[in-house]
Length: 561
Image 1 (tube, helix red, strand yellow):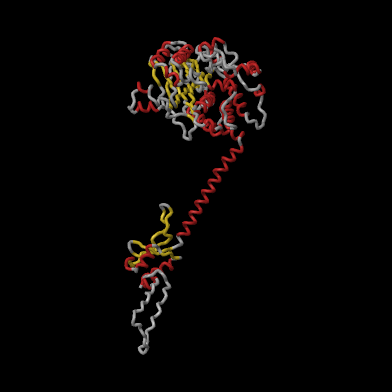
Image 2 (cartoon, one colour):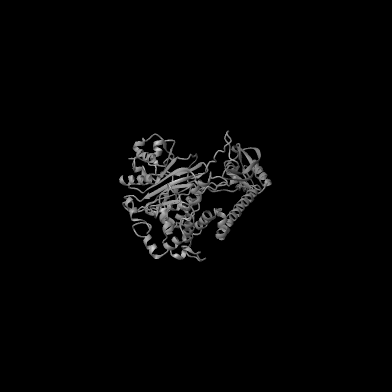
């Protein structure tokens, strides 16, 4: 397609694609024993996750979520990326629930997520929790995200002033997070126009200990993204850093020829992977001084407690100016060297972790990026949070081939597929049996009759006198002119309690008996005549006392008369 021409006939240069230039840093802080934050940033994706659950697995939650999203870092979305980001976060949430189901010790873990996905000249935004996203555009600095916290709700309702939020006893209570919950998470989603030159700051809530106006001044005045990230983390440490802190700085820029040439750079050479599989490298990667044996000594100077999870090379950790400089997070592994080969088809309980680590290393090596925090530790050690079988299939499908999850599950889990098919079939048979049983039962009731009361008169009903919930199992067949209150007491009681009949003829016979005898029974015994003494017979009567004769108890038919 030809480029548009100006009135003078000169071609207007075509717009270059937009990419992110970035820097990231994460620090454990001065109080916490481990880093529960995770972050990833590349040319098209930036995500920050702040895990919670403490010892129960906050680091697992944030690392699993970030590592499950890194395959989104590309600009090839033929059908558009409107729902891609939200769908991946929902998937990450379901994986967290499965991890808890597999390991109940992780119960209660969760994570915040704040993410940006750049597609063409649109920026897709997703957010849940209290990590934050700030934007500097046209000299205007503003917070784009909204904290999903209890105190923010009080502020929104006018029950709390913003300046009171920092001292509120429940300021850290979150209302929405990803984690061990059954319901789908409620995300804040938006699609924003983007312009070259605008800056974004994504951060965990650990940065809240630095005054807002100081953060704004640093973002405005510090031109180098690496330096800005360093300063913001250092300021947090100076303020006491009681929480982990993670900062991602990025700037939207037009892609250059150099960027195109390094789009698929081999960030982790095969020789490097082989080298780190040596025992010496494995031992060094576990030392307290840092996650990598190749980490320069001067890197510790910027992190007083030396517990921050940072990329291996300080010179390549922050690629704001040069996108070809990368983190070597994916190059350090504590797994044995034989894991680089194809895993054997056995029931090895760690097979999922091995395969996930290989898949992750290939993905991280395929593009410029930075990975920090708990996610970097997982990548370095190969301890990738997995759900046996399911996570492996999902990651292999989405990371390596970007195929639909079901295609992979059809190959790797045929037994589960059969179970998924069988359960709905069994449920359908059970439901059908219940429906048929109910229908046959109702049909039988419609062959029965009974005599009862309708509008204070004796009436014949078709069906039975019971109800099935709101459904009456009878209908009025006929109403007679016999008033119920004209019957003897026993007859009234029988009619009001209903008199069952085998068919319509039996019901009509019962009505006839009620009319003639006042009783619903067809066989009333005949009262025997009392013998009368003969006139010539003398019946002596004692003179001392009268003889009391007991009164006979009337039968139902006698009572009716």
